[in-house]
Length: 242
Image (cartoon, rainbow, N blue to C red; front, top):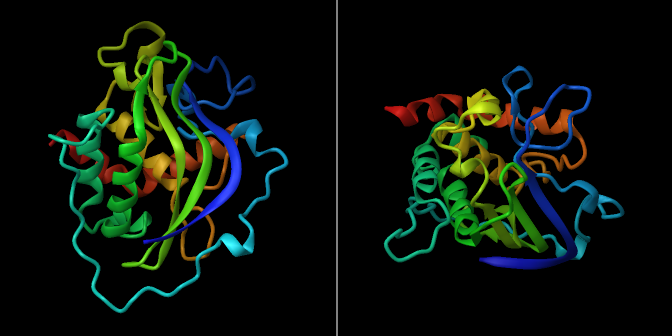
């Protein structure tokens, strides 16, 4: 695996909040059912003054070797530290097969490879109830998966809010009206969709662009990004209850 460090330091975060109206919406991942859900990834103000793409010298362009990509394998949850094991299992179940969702993320091999590394970075952290969902900080590193020839990135640190949507089971009151896409916040589909959305910001498509564009400070784009992921993955997410 080849990699190159991109010297851009910024903070990415996920807000957990109830949106009172479309007009007053802020970047967030959860909101009332009437408005759906913006993306669970927000690069926000940190994007100001940052180039849209890394320097040319930092981009890997080598062609992949002519070998068959090995089948994706899950993390060993008995020995690896994962912030939310049940959600990890759900997302792995979605991505391991050749389906519309995994193909959106570059196929099972690449999708699972990147998701596994992202999952190992996530650490639970108490960030306050109703405040944040996920925080990613620091520089990011560009990688090239030699099996597929596709590029992705990882941030230095990623924190999962242990008071946020991943602990919203049995939600009542305002939390009961919160949604990630079309899914209620306390469902396994909502948690899986948040992680899948994060994945979309980490993987590059064949056109050299991130599968999901940076959407910090742009509520409309955030919601569109979430809808994009759900469009490709809804069938697999619904099957999680089976």
